[in-house]
Image (tube, rainbow, N blue to C red):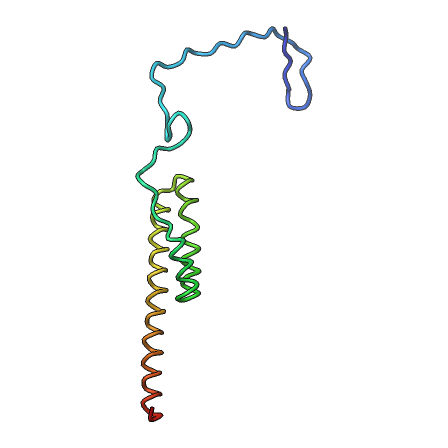
Length: 127
């Protein structure tokens, strides 16, 4: 068997015998850089909680804008963890928790203000 090669603009007219391909022997202890042989990185602990349920509840019953921010951060947790960005997944989980707490705090604050306003307005009406 012979081979021809591409010269950049056309195939060469010259031919040469094809040498058999020889591969080096496999290493006795293969080294895997960055991952295990299967291609999956080892787990760096347990996956953080996404707080998705809490974010949805905060959106429905507390403060809509802050609950939506919590849902956005919650949705990032699983994707980042699956991609191997464990630090990013933990950060997104902490952000989701923060937005849930802020949403609940704002709802409690508005509830207290509403109660005080209701008490003040009823005190002036004579009831």
